[in-house]
Image (tube, one colour):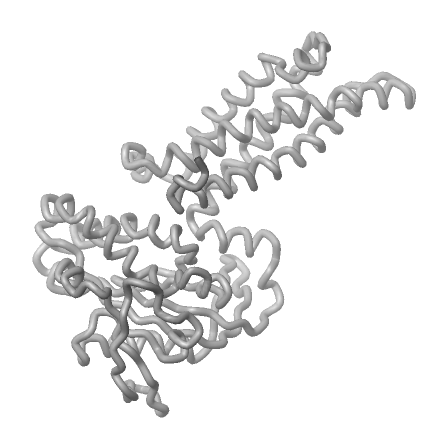
Length: 362
């Protein structure tokens, strides 16, 4: 059964299980706090209370977290839920907190842990307020974490949360620069507001294939998306190379909607390069993870070179040496390219599907 699941579904299941495991640990802590707060005097009373409250806390946490994570990971990404994107951050936060709080409240009221352990709990005003408080606070924190992860990206958020880049260090990374072709002409025809909506729709459509390839969206620069992988993640299954074609396939599948809505089908150009960067956190008021190094400038210059050599996707020889083209993709040696603003030329290849007819949609 697992083998028949799509790669996107498998990735979402992995994320779901990580959240549930983390919730179980939190449930131990919440159960311990509740047990200590409601225990009678004496060590025996405390031990007896904890022996019941901790398993109950874990059960409640598992049921609540699986419900909330299921909504966030499997339900909200659906197209039918895109109306939430139009709401302000604060409105979404309040709405989710109320909905998820109601779920947590329903789990508490149902007393699944107590029923499973054969314990009858009668909430008085004090214990009821403690239970509600201990459930709403984690729910609000979880909602805020989901919202923050949606703003900066799940992997970037986890790196910030864990302080991975608090101290800068060197690492080898792939960078994929993807540019929307003809965006200036599209903006002139559609106007600034509709052009923004067009780009927003493109960026939304490519989010899932980038996630499928385990890429991190580093930033949006005008009409350009910058995607990155640490070398080991990008090499696995040639994700860094396949990502561009996955993006194009997603846009091709959604072409009719773009033509009906904006009168144009998105076209893309891209470049891929691999090299060493210095990664670290910067900023005080607004913290961010940034990458410094020649590899990013070179990738940008390679993307610009696609116009000159008549190729939609260029990859540096260094990137291909690490990856190796997977089946269904072929390369054409472009030789050594002199890039504008760069002293040293760079050896590069044109990358395309084995079936050249697939290029017609781009």
